[in-house]
Image (cartoon, rainbow, N blue to C red; front, side, top):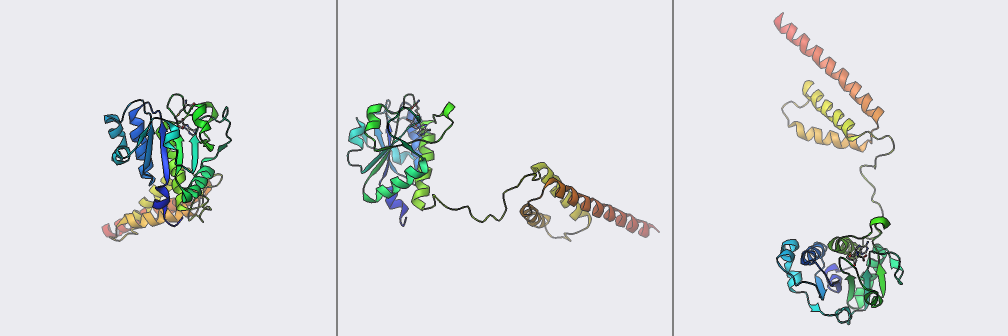
Amino acid sequence: MSDPSKAASDLRIVLVGTQHPGNIGAAARAMKTMGLSKLVLVAPEKAPDRDTRAMAAGADDLVEAAPVFSTLAEAVADCRWVLGATARNRRIQLEPLHPREAARRAVAAAASGPVALVFGRERTGLTNEELQLCHAAVHIPSDPAFSSLNLAAAVQVLSYELRCALLGDADMPLAEARTPPPGEGAASHAELEGLFGQLADTLDQIDFHKGRAPDSAMRKLRRLYLRANLDSADVRLLRGVLADAQRMARLAAQADAGGKIG
Ligand code: SAH
């Protein structure tokens, strides 16, 4: 997508019958972090208030600019494509799309006119009549035993997917990782920290730094060891090597001290 902000201006987030004014502010913030600005309210139970402003945390401009309609039909009358977000996977007639797929289609449709993403009430969601006004449904694949996200959290997840689609990286392949993902038997965090602690002590004892800042060498060494994807046995081996180096450093220090005395 050549100009994400232009396409974003045709993506509209519609909140229907919102019960908690704080959620309107939190939804506005969620949108603004993802570069979306067109918020539309349909018959909110309470007008935006102090809670809205507090939760918007700097995204109040979206709320102030938001038109308020009394019905969903009016709010989406000029839209090319209307997508209803639903917490329920069953009992709806429209086959729900996966958020990624929905976002890609929404961004493609926004090239030819306004697109609405519609969210329901906190307690009861969208009515069947409202869902019938939608061309498609989208469901965030939550745990079926606890499927309903907070309204603003749902706005955040779907706004994020819209942003990824706008940036054209929704189907980005896994980048060649500099640090490979840990495999089976990978050393634990505590084992690695134990190794790094002993390594730092050893570097001091063998006078590795010679006046240079120790932090920089340790940062590089940490990175190097993390790249090696160590398992527990590797950590034990390296710690054994360090233990011997520390023992030799102690002997050298003793011999040095003995020599000076003698
Ligand atoms: N108890 C309501 C839940 C409403 S949550 C119900 O059963 O529908 C408020 C709104 O957030 C929903 O109407 C929907 O638009 C959105 N939402 C919540 N969870 C969602 C999910 N898993 N997938 C898509 N949208 C969701």
